[in-house]
Image 1 (cartoon, rainbow, N blue to C red):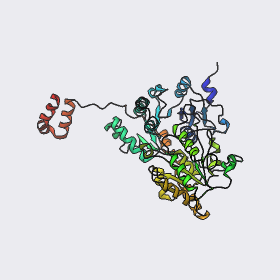
Image 2 (cartoon, rainbow, N blue to C red):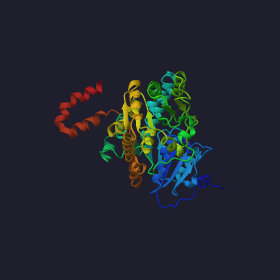
Image 3 (spheres, rainbow, N blue to C red):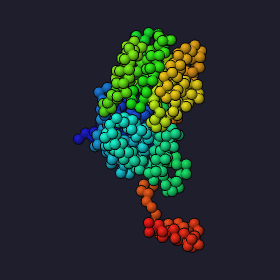
Image 4 (cartoon, helix red, strand yellow):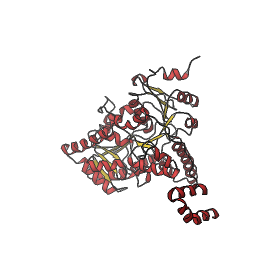
Amino acid sequence: MSDPVKEQVGDYVNKKSKILIITLEPIGKKMAGPAIRALEIGKRLCRDFEVTVASTVKVEDGIDKSSLPPNLKLVEGAGKKMIARLALIHSAIFIQANVLKPFPFLGNMDKHLIVDLYDPYLFSVLVQYKDDPVQAESSYRLMHQVLEKHMIKADFTVCASERQRDYWLGRFCALGRLNPEIYAVDRSLRKLIDVVPYGVPEEIPTKLPGKGLRERLPQLGDAPVLLWGGGIWDWFDPLTVINAVHQALQERPDLKLVFMGTKSPNPKVPVMDMTEKARRLCDELDMTGKSAFFLDGWVPYQERASCLLDATVAVSAHFDLPETRFSFRTRVLDYFWCGMPILTTEGDRLADLIAAKGAGFALPYQDVAAWKAAILEMTGKNSQELQKVKEASRALGQEFLWDKNVEPLRKFLENPHHLPDYKKVTMPNLLERAHAVYRRGGKELILKRSAELFGDILK
Protein backbone atom coordinates (compact mmCIF):
# COMPACT_ATOMS: atom_id res chain seq x y z
CA MET A 1 0.00 0.00 0.00
CA SER A 2 1.39 3.41 -0.97
CA ASP A 3 2.39 5.93 1.69
CA PRO A 4 0.94 9.38 0.80
CA VAL A 5 3.49 11.16 2.98
CA LYS A 6 6.42 9.40 1.31
CA GLU A 7 4.89 10.08 -2.10
CA GLN A 8 4.80 13.82 -1.39
CA VAL A 9 7.96 14.18 0.69
CA GLY A 10 10.19 11.36 -0.54
CA ASP A 11 13.32 10.31 1.33
CA TYR A 12 15.52 12.65 3.31
CA VAL A 13 19.22 12.19 3.91
CA ASN A 14 18.22 11.64 7.57
CA LYS A 15 21.29 13.38 8.95
CA LYS A 16 19.75 16.65 10.04
CA SER A 17 16.86 17.91 12.15
CA LYS A 18 13.57 17.89 10.29
CA ILE A 19 11.50 21.08 10.23
CA LEU A 20 7.87 21.30 9.13
CA ILE A 21 6.63 24.74 8.01
CA ILE A 22 2.85 25.08 7.63
CA THR A 23 0.83 27.81 5.91
CA LEU A 24 -2.88 28.04 5.13
CA GLU A 25 -2.06 30.09 2.01
CA PRO A 26 -1.61 28.67 -1.51
CA ILE A 27 1.99 28.16 -2.65
CA GLY A 28 2.21 28.42 -6.40
CA LYS A 29 3.22 30.77 -9.17
CA LYS A 30 0.96 33.40 -7.58
CA MET A 31 1.54 33.95 -3.86
CA ALA A 32 0.74 36.52 -1.20
CA GLY A 33 2.97 37.48 1.73
CA PRO A 34 2.34 34.57 4.17
CA ALA A 35 3.02 31.91 1.51
CA ILE A 36 6.10 33.74 0.24
CA ARG A 37 7.43 34.02 3.79
CA ALA A 38 6.92 30.31 4.46
CA LEU A 39 8.64 29.27 1.23
CA GLU A 40 11.56 31.71 1.44
CA ILE A 41 12.28 30.85 5.08
CA GLY A 42 12.19 27.17 4.10
CA LYS A 43 14.70 27.78 1.31
CA ARG A 44 17.17 29.33 3.75
CA LEU A 45 16.71 26.84 6.57
CA CYS A 46 17.16 23.85 4.26
CA ARG A 47 20.85 24.71 3.94
CA ASP A 48 21.24 23.46 7.51
CA PHE A 49 18.15 21.32 8.13
CA GLU A 50 15.73 19.09 6.29
CA VAL A 51 12.63 21.15 5.62
CA THR A 52 9.09 20.39 4.50
CA VAL A 53 6.84 23.32 3.59
CA ALA A 54 3.18 22.29 3.67
CA SER A 55 0.31 24.32 2.25
CA THR A 56 -3.29 23.34 2.92
CA VAL A 57 -4.31 24.66 -0.52
CA LYS A 58 -3.89 22.77 -3.79
CA VAL A 59 -3.38 25.04 -6.80
CA GLU A 60 -3.45 24.21 -10.49
CA ASP A 61 -0.68 26.67 -11.27
CA GLY A 62 1.91 25.22 -8.90
CA ILE A 63 5.62 25.90 -8.73
CA ASP A 64 8.17 23.60 -10.34
CA LYS A 65 9.24 21.34 -7.47
CA SER A 66 12.36 20.28 -9.36
CA SER A 67 13.64 23.85 -8.95
CA LEU A 68 13.60 23.58 -5.15
CA PRO A 69 16.79 22.88 -3.16
CA PRO A 70 17.37 19.16 -2.44
CA ASN A 71 16.69 19.45 1.31
CA LEU A 72 13.38 21.27 0.78
CA LYS A 73 10.17 19.37 0.10
CA LEU A 74 6.84 20.99 -0.78
CA VAL A 75 3.47 19.44 0.06
CA GLU A 76 0.29 20.97 -1.36
CA GLY A 77 -3.35 20.43 -0.44
CA ALA A 78 -2.49 18.97 2.97
CA GLY A 79 -5.52 18.03 5.07
CA LYS A 80 -5.69 16.96 8.72
CA LYS A 81 -4.41 13.43 8.17
CA MET A 82 -1.49 14.59 6.06
CA ILE A 83 -0.56 17.38 8.49
CA ALA A 84 -0.73 14.94 11.42
CA ARG A 85 1.51 12.40 9.68
CA LEU A 86 3.97 15.06 8.59
CA ALA A 87 4.13 16.43 12.13
CA LEU A 88 5.02 12.99 13.49
CA ILE A 89 8.13 12.69 11.31
CA HIS A 90 9.49 16.19 12.01
CA SER A 91 11.25 17.37 15.15
CA ALA A 92 10.12 21.01 14.99
CA ILE A 93 7.03 22.69 13.57
CA PHE A 94 6.95 26.32 12.39
CA ILE A 95 3.42 27.67 11.93
CA GLN A 96 1.79 30.97 11.14
CA ALA A 97 -0.53 32.24 13.87
CA ASN A 98 -3.77 30.86 12.43
CA VAL A 99 -2.74 27.24 11.87
CA LEU A 100 -3.89 25.87 15.25
CA LYS A 101 -7.46 26.84 14.34
CA PRO A 102 -7.88 23.96 11.82
CA PHE A 103 -5.12 21.81 13.37
CA PRO A 104 -5.33 22.23 17.19
CA PHE A 105 -3.59 18.88 17.78
CA LEU A 106 -0.28 20.44 16.69
CA GLY A 107 -0.19 22.31 19.99
CA ASN A 108 -0.34 19.08 22.00
CA MET A 109 2.40 17.08 20.29
CA ASP A 110 5.80 16.58 21.83
CA LYS A 111 7.43 18.77 19.20
CA HIS A 112 9.26 22.07 19.32
CA LEU A 113 6.56 24.51 18.23
CA ILE A 114 7.54 27.85 16.68
CA VAL A 115 4.84 30.43 15.97
CA ASP A 116 5.24 33.22 13.43
CA LEU A 117 3.65 36.42 14.78
CA TYR A 118 4.79 38.65 11.92
CA ASP A 119 1.19 39.67 11.16
CA PRO A 120 -0.65 41.23 14.15
CA TYR A 121 -3.90 40.44 12.36
CA LEU A 122 -6.36 41.52 15.06
CA PHE A 123 -5.85 45.11 13.91
CA SER A 124 -6.78 44.10 10.35
CA VAL A 125 -9.93 42.38 11.62
CA LEU A 126 -11.01 45.63 13.30
CA VAL A 127 -10.64 47.51 10.01
CA GLN A 128 -12.12 44.89 7.73
CA TYR A 129 -15.41 44.53 9.63
CA LYS A 130 -15.81 48.08 10.94
CA ASP A 131 -19.13 48.54 9.10
CA ASP A 132 -20.65 45.28 10.38
CA PRO A 133 -20.73 45.24 14.21
CA VAL A 134 -22.07 41.68 14.41
CA GLN A 135 -19.37 40.27 12.13
CA ALA A 136 -16.74 42.44 13.82
CA GLU A 137 -17.63 41.18 17.31
CA SER A 138 -17.71 37.52 16.28
CA SER A 139 -14.55 37.62 14.14
CA TYR A 140 -12.55 39.58 16.69
CA ARG A 141 -13.45 37.29 19.59
CA LEU A 142 -12.78 34.18 17.53
CA MET A 143 -9.39 35.31 16.25
CA HIS A 144 -8.44 36.71 19.66
CA GLN A 145 -8.88 33.23 21.14
CA VAL A 146 -7.04 31.62 18.21
CA LEU A 147 -4.13 34.01 18.65
CA GLU A 148 -3.91 33.43 22.40
CA LYS A 149 -3.83 29.67 21.88
CA HIS A 150 -0.78 30.09 19.63
CA MET A 151 0.94 32.34 22.18
CA ILE A 152 0.28 29.85 24.99
CA LYS A 153 1.40 26.74 23.09
CA ALA A 154 4.56 28.11 21.44
CA ASP A 155 8.06 27.17 22.57
CA PHE A 156 9.44 30.07 20.54
CA THR A 157 7.89 32.93 18.57
CA VAL A 158 9.16 35.38 15.99
CA CYS A 159 7.86 38.68 14.67
CA ALA A 160 8.89 41.15 11.96
CA SER A 161 10.44 44.09 13.84
CA GLU A 162 11.57 45.36 17.23
CA ARG A 163 8.48 47.57 17.30
CA GLN A 164 6.30 44.51 16.82
CA ARG A 165 8.29 42.73 19.51
CA ASP A 166 7.40 45.49 21.99
CA TYR A 167 3.73 44.94 21.16
CA TRP A 168 3.96 41.16 21.55
CA LEU A 169 5.91 41.40 24.83
CA GLY A 170 3.06 43.52 26.17
CA ARG A 171 0.56 40.91 25.04
CA PHE A 172 2.62 38.06 26.52
CA CYS A 173 2.78 39.97 29.81
CA ALA A 174 -0.98 40.62 29.87
CA LEU A 175 -1.64 36.97 29.02
CA GLY A 176 0.58 35.79 31.85
CA ARG A 177 2.90 33.88 29.51
CA LEU A 178 5.69 36.23 30.50
CA ASN A 179 6.18 35.32 34.15
CA PRO A 180 9.00 34.79 36.67
CA GLU A 181 9.57 31.23 35.42
CA ILE A 182 10.05 32.39 31.80
CA TYR A 183 12.18 35.32 32.98
CA ALA A 184 14.45 32.89 34.84
CA VAL A 185 15.03 30.98 31.60
CA ASP A 186 16.19 34.08 29.70
CA ARG A 187 16.16 37.65 31.01
CA SER A 188 16.43 39.06 27.47
CA LEU A 189 13.24 37.13 26.59
CA ARG A 190 14.75 36.34 23.17
CA LYS A 191 13.98 32.69 23.88
CA LEU A 192 10.33 33.68 24.07
CA ILE A 193 10.22 36.03 21.07
CA ASP A 194 12.84 37.25 18.61
CA VAL A 195 12.79 39.18 15.33
CA VAL A 196 12.72 37.58 11.87
CA PRO A 197 11.76 40.32 9.41
CA TYR A 198 10.20 39.70 6.03
CA GLY A 199 13.13 39.55 3.65
CA VAL A 200 14.74 40.36 0.34
CA PRO A 201 16.23 37.76 -2.03
CA GLU A 202 20.00 37.65 -2.32
CA GLU A 203 19.93 37.55 -6.13
CA ILE A 204 19.79 40.74 -8.22
CA PRO A 205 16.29 41.37 -9.66
CA THR A 206 15.99 41.05 -13.44
CA LYS A 207 13.29 41.62 -16.05
CA LEU A 208 11.85 38.62 -17.86
CA PRO A 209 11.15 39.00 -21.59
CA GLY A 210 7.56 40.00 -22.26
CA LYS A 211 6.65 40.33 -18.56
CA GLY A 212 7.42 44.00 -17.97
CA LEU A 213 4.80 46.47 -16.82
CA ARG A 214 5.04 48.47 -20.03
CA GLU A 215 4.65 45.32 -22.10
CA ARG A 216 1.54 44.35 -20.16
CA LEU A 217 0.18 47.89 -20.55
CA PRO A 218 1.42 49.41 -23.84
CA GLN A 219 -0.59 52.55 -23.00
CA LEU A 220 2.14 53.48 -20.51
CA GLY A 221 4.68 54.17 -23.24
CA ASP A 222 7.65 56.06 -21.81
CA ALA A 223 5.57 57.97 -19.24
CA PRO A 224 6.59 58.21 -15.58
CA VAL A 225 4.76 55.41 -13.74
CA LEU A 226 3.72 55.27 -10.08
CA LEU A 227 3.30 51.62 -9.08
CA TRP A 228 1.11 50.33 -6.25
CA GLY A 229 2.91 47.03 -5.81
CA GLY A 230 0.39 44.75 -4.13
CA GLY A 231 -3.19 44.21 -3.05
CA ILE A 232 -5.66 46.98 -2.22
CA TRP A 233 -6.71 45.94 1.28
CA ASP A 234 -9.18 47.83 3.46
CA TRP A 235 -6.43 49.16 5.75
CA PHE A 236 -4.66 50.82 2.79
CA ASP A 237 -5.41 54.29 1.42
CA PRO A 238 -5.29 54.30 -2.39
CA LEU A 239 -7.82 57.15 -2.50
CA THR A 240 -5.32 59.79 -1.36
CA VAL A 241 -2.85 58.62 -4.02
CA ILE A 242 -5.51 58.67 -6.76
CA ASN A 243 -6.63 62.19 -5.81
CA ALA A 244 -3.03 63.39 -5.66
CA VAL A 245 -2.24 61.97 -9.10
CA HIS A 246 -5.41 63.58 -10.47
CA GLN A 247 -4.26 66.97 -9.20
CA ALA A 248 -0.68 66.43 -10.36
CA LEU A 249 -1.91 65.69 -13.90
CA GLN A 250 -2.57 69.40 -14.33
CA GLU A 251 1.19 70.01 -14.15
CA ARG A 252 2.40 66.61 -15.33
CA PRO A 253 -0.22 65.30 -17.81
CA ASP A 254 1.84 62.24 -18.77
CA LEU A 255 1.70 60.69 -15.26
CA LYS A 256 0.43 57.11 -14.94
CA LEU A 257 -0.69 55.18 -11.86
CA VAL A 258 -0.80 51.36 -11.91
CA PHE A 259 -2.26 49.01 -9.29
CA MET A 260 -0.44 45.69 -9.54
CA GLY A 261 -2.85 43.46 -7.59
CA THR A 262 -6.63 43.43 -7.17
CA LYS A 263 -7.46 39.85 -6.13
CA SER A 264 -5.51 37.77 -3.62
CA PRO A 265 -4.29 34.38 -4.88
CA ASN A 266 -5.99 32.86 -1.83
CA PRO A 267 -9.53 31.96 -2.98
CA LYS A 268 -10.81 32.47 0.58
CA VAL A 269 -9.82 36.16 0.57
CA PRO A 270 -12.55 38.27 -1.06
CA VAL A 271 -12.06 41.37 -3.17
CA MET A 272 -12.13 44.03 -0.47
CA ASP A 273 -14.29 47.15 -0.37
CA MET A 274 -11.28 49.42 -0.79
CA THR A 275 -10.53 47.84 -4.17
CA GLU A 276 -14.01 48.78 -5.38
CA LYS A 277 -13.71 52.27 -3.90
CA ALA A 278 -10.43 52.82 -5.75
CA ARG A 279 -11.95 51.69 -9.04
CA ARG A 280 -15.01 53.90 -8.56
CA LEU A 281 -12.91 56.96 -7.76
CA CYS A 282 -10.78 56.45 -10.88
CA ASP A 283 -13.98 56.15 -12.93
CA GLU A 284 -15.45 59.31 -11.38
CA LEU A 285 -12.26 61.27 -12.12
CA ASP A 286 -12.14 59.89 -15.68
CA MET A 287 -8.71 58.37 -15.03
CA THR A 288 -9.43 54.69 -15.72
CA GLY A 289 -7.60 53.47 -18.80
CA LYS A 290 -6.02 56.89 -19.32
CA SER A 291 -3.89 57.74 -16.29
CA ALA A 292 -4.90 54.93 -13.91
CA PHE A 293 -4.73 51.20 -14.59
CA PHE A 294 -5.63 48.07 -12.63
CA LEU A 295 -3.96 44.74 -13.38
CA ASP A 296 -6.67 42.16 -12.79
CA GLY A 297 -5.85 39.24 -10.52
CA TRP A 298 -2.31 38.87 -9.19
CA VAL A 299 1.14 39.09 -10.77
CA PRO A 300 3.08 35.78 -10.48
CA TYR A 301 5.80 35.84 -7.83
CA GLN A 302 8.67 35.28 -10.26
CA GLU A 303 7.40 38.08 -12.51
CA ARG A 304 6.99 40.80 -9.89
CA ALA A 305 10.47 42.24 -10.47
CA SER A 306 9.67 42.66 -14.16
CA CYS A 307 6.81 44.96 -13.20
CA LEU A 308 8.66 46.80 -10.45
CA LEU A 309 11.74 47.51 -12.56
CA ASP A 310 9.56 49.06 -15.27
CA ALA A 311 8.08 51.65 -12.88
CA THR A 312 9.47 55.07 -12.01
CA VAL A 313 8.29 55.37 -8.41
CA ALA A 314 6.76 52.87 -5.95
CA VAL A 315 3.88 53.94 -3.71
CA SER A 316 2.19 52.63 -0.56
CA ALA A 317 -0.38 54.59 1.44
CA HIS A 318 -2.33 53.79 4.57
CA PHE A 319 -4.34 55.32 7.40
CA ASP A 320 -3.49 56.45 10.93
CA LEU A 321 -4.31 53.11 12.55
CA PRO A 322 -2.71 50.67 15.00
CA GLU A 323 -2.47 48.30 12.00
CA THR A 324 -0.16 50.82 10.34
CA ARG A 325 2.08 51.34 13.36
CA PHE A 326 2.78 47.63 13.79
CA SER A 327 2.78 46.64 10.12
CA PHE A 328 5.76 45.43 8.12
CA ARG A 329 4.75 45.81 4.48
CA THR A 330 5.75 42.94 2.21
CA ARG A 331 5.59 45.13 -0.88
CA VAL A 332 8.01 47.69 0.56
CA LEU A 333 10.68 44.99 0.88
CA ASP A 334 10.21 44.30 -2.84
CA TYR A 335 10.61 48.03 -3.49
CA PHE A 336 13.94 47.91 -1.64
CA TRP A 337 15.02 44.82 -3.56
CA CYS A 338 14.42 46.55 -6.90
CA GLY A 339 16.01 49.80 -5.73
CA MET A 340 12.89 51.88 -6.27
CA PRO A 341 12.28 55.46 -5.13
CA ILE A 342 9.40 55.20 -2.65
CA LEU A 343 6.50 57.41 -1.65
CA THR A 344 4.71 56.12 1.43
CA THR A 345 2.63 57.31 4.34
CA GLU A 346 4.39 57.88 7.63
CA GLY A 347 3.73 55.79 10.72
CA ASP A 348 5.38 52.38 10.35
CA ARG A 349 8.95 51.21 10.87
CA LEU A 350 9.78 50.94 7.16
CA ALA A 351 8.47 54.46 6.51
CA ASP A 352 10.86 55.71 9.20
CA LEU A 353 13.77 54.01 7.41
CA ILE A 354 12.75 55.34 3.99
CA ALA A 355 12.72 58.92 5.28
CA ALA A 356 15.92 58.56 7.33
CA LYS A 357 17.98 56.92 4.56
CA GLY A 358 16.80 59.10 1.67
CA ALA A 359 15.05 56.26 -0.19
CA GLY A 360 11.97 58.43 -0.75
CA PHE A 361 9.41 60.41 1.22
CA ALA A 362 7.23 59.47 4.22
CA LEU A 363 4.13 61.65 3.94
CA PRO A 364 1.37 62.73 6.35
CA TYR A 365 -1.80 60.63 6.50
CA GLN A 366 -4.47 61.46 3.90
CA ASP A 367 -2.65 64.63 2.84
CA VAL A 368 -3.44 64.99 -0.87
CA ALA A 369 -1.44 68.21 -1.22
CA ALA A 370 1.68 66.64 0.30
CA TRP A 371 1.32 63.60 -1.96
CA LYS A 372 0.87 65.78 -5.04
CA ALA A 373 4.01 67.78 -4.19
CA ALA A 374 6.02 64.61 -3.53
CA ILE A 375 4.86 63.00 -6.79
CA LEU A 376 5.88 66.06 -8.80
CA GLU A 377 9.20 66.36 -6.98
CA MET A 378 10.14 62.69 -7.35
CA THR A 379 9.11 62.39 -11.01
CA GLY A 380 10.82 65.71 -11.73
CA LYS A 381 14.26 64.64 -10.50
CA ASN A 382 17.03 64.32 -13.07
CA SER A 383 18.64 60.93 -13.65
CA GLN A 384 21.54 61.67 -11.30
CA GLU A 385 19.26 62.71 -8.44
CA LEU A 386 16.97 59.74 -9.02
CA GLN A 387 19.92 57.35 -9.04
CA LYS A 388 20.93 58.55 -5.59
CA VAL A 389 17.46 57.73 -4.24
CA LYS A 390 17.53 54.32 -5.94
CA GLU A 391 20.88 53.49 -4.36
CA ALA A 392 19.54 54.42 -0.92
CA SER A 393 16.54 52.13 -1.46
CA ARG A 394 18.72 49.27 -2.68
CA ALA A 395 21.03 49.71 0.34
CA LEU A 396 18.04 49.30 2.66
CA GLY A 397 17.29 46.02 0.94
CA GLN A 398 20.73 44.74 1.91
CA GLU A 399 19.74 45.13 5.56
CA PHE A 400 16.90 42.63 5.10
CA LEU A 401 18.41 39.72 3.18
CA TRP A 402 16.50 36.53 3.85
CA ASP A 403 19.61 34.54 4.74
CA LYS A 404 20.52 37.03 7.46
CA ASN A 405 16.95 37.43 8.68
CA VAL A 406 16.42 33.75 9.52
CA GLU A 407 19.39 33.59 11.92
CA PRO A 408 17.21 33.55 15.10
CA LEU A 409 15.30 30.56 13.69
CA ARG A 410 18.54 28.82 12.77
CA LYS A 411 19.89 29.36 16.30
CA PHE A 412 16.74 27.98 17.89
CA LEU A 413 16.71 24.91 15.65
CA GLU A 414 20.37 24.18 16.41
CA ASN A 415 19.61 24.25 20.14
CA PRO A 416 15.83 23.96 20.60
CA HIS A 417 14.08 24.36 23.92
CA HIS A 418 10.66 23.84 25.44
CA LEU A 419 9.34 26.77 27.44
CA PRO A 420 7.74 26.09 30.84
CA ASP A 421 4.06 25.23 30.53
CA TYR A 422 1.61 28.10 30.62
CA LYS A 423 -0.04 28.76 33.96
CA LYS A 424 -3.02 31.06 34.18
CA VAL A 425 -2.29 33.99 36.48
CA THR A 426 -4.36 33.84 39.68
CA MET A 427 -4.30 35.79 42.92
CA PRO A 428 -1.88 34.17 45.44
CA ASN A 429 -3.63 32.63 48.45
CA LEU A 430 -2.98 33.70 52.04
CA LEU A 431 -0.31 31.07 52.66
CA GLU A 432 1.58 32.01 49.50
CA ARG A 433 1.49 35.70 50.35
CA ALA A 434 2.56 35.09 53.94
CA HIS A 435 5.44 32.93 52.75
CA ALA A 436 6.56 35.67 50.34
CA VAL A 437 6.35 38.33 53.06
CA TYR A 438 8.35 36.12 55.44
CA ARG A 439 11.04 35.58 52.78
CA ARG A 440 11.30 39.32 52.36
CA GLY A 441 11.32 40.46 56.00
CA GLY A 442 10.94 37.60 58.48
CA LYS A 443 8.51 37.46 61.40
CA GLU A 444 8.68 41.21 62.00
CA LEU A 445 7.31 41.97 58.53
CA ILE A 446 4.69 39.23 58.91
CA LEU A 447 3.40 40.91 62.08
CA LYS A 448 3.53 44.34 60.45
CA ARG A 449 1.59 43.15 57.39
CA SER A 450 -0.82 40.78 59.17
CA ALA A 451 -3.70 43.27 59.24
CA GLU A 452 -3.37 43.80 55.51
CA LEU A 453 -3.16 40.05 54.80
CA PHE A 454 -6.23 39.18 56.86
CA GLY A 455 -8.09 42.23 55.60
CA ASP A 456 -7.74 40.92 52.06
CA ILE A 457 -9.36 37.64 53.12
CA LEU A 458 -12.44 39.48 54.37
CA LYS A 459 -12.90 41.49 51.17
